[in-house]
Length: 75
Image (cartoon, rainbow, N blue to C red):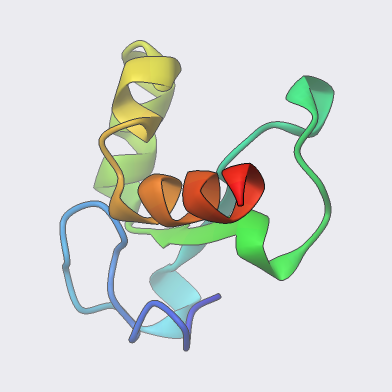
């Protein structure tokens, strides 16, 4: 996921080192998400804090990768 996201945070675009990357599920496992590559995104620590502190549903829906995943799910 880190390489797919071009070593950048998927939310803000910050260039990151692998050691500073937080990998999270786009769709929680409890909500039907899977343990697959397409359900993972790379975030910086600040964006991860934002995701966890605000309404995650509205925040995740603003991520570019969410649009791509929803395209594949609906196809």
